[in-house]
Length: 436
Image (tube, rainbow, N blue to C red):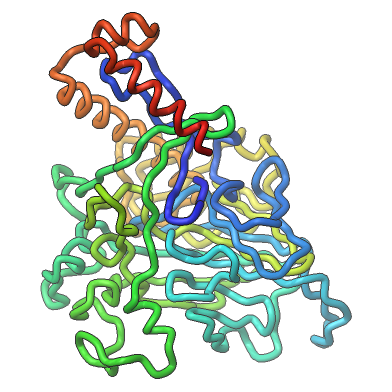
């Protein structure tokens, strides 16, 4: 996903088999696995071809992963390949750069470290501090830092979308609503609407969609002396706050591990990320209050002047978290995805299918309380894209009067759509190319 001003761009591809006038669908660029996004990243970042290593020679720059967490319990880890070097006595011998790792939302700025604003939560290598809204707080033991060679694992838990929507609708009651309550199988998945149009950019097709912007309430929250607003300045963010942007997800947390040892819970009660807590930029024709399916908390990394990291989204981890079964020290590169790995449920009923990241047994979906690798979330996200592409296809087919429209040739397009209509559709994309 690319970011440019108030717009986001993602790859799409033409499919003549689509029976509607809107015959494009989402496509995922290589590599086809969970990795740091080459597009959803600040400038001056340097990646390897796998998207698992990143560094920079500039000041702090951030990149997000190509997969987002929306609900459940997920884990990933990060190895510091270049950073602070200290002696056994804790004396710093040299500084090869800095890194911060954590989670961020779509609205978080990329030209700053993780934890810079209210939209991201980060762990800082210097002093092992946790950072949110640029406010570092002690987290690791006194005198302990994250240095070269260390592996930091991050575990996030978000309540079910069912509970999240109760919070955002102002209907959450902590007395009767449990944060780990899961919806019935037939509960609707939510109001996912993907308002986007295909455009041509530098010989490739992209979907253009409106970006979500920062809100005044969260910018004001960063102010040491916030102004009075709904609920008053003294009211801290909570699940029942009068302002949707300041509502939090009950039971949510981010835990941190260092070299396989649990350091502790760095953050709790994370801020809500779905509408109306998130709002798109005001543009003609943009509908507010709709979720495009890509909102959530993204694994994020920021590097500073030579700092470098290697990420691991599973399914095999260097230091597996509790509840995860798998070999330590997995191979690097594409071979890492070729082995099998088991993810043990509390009932012991199922395991992951090889190469897919999905359970092969009869129990699906897995419990939200069981820790899962981010690679599995990537597979789920692809499946969601396919489902919503089918829904979009049906929607446009109905709007076309349930007629099959063939754009494989210009003559057929004009004949089926009605004279010049097909030519107009093609001309719109051509004009976008010329304007670019």
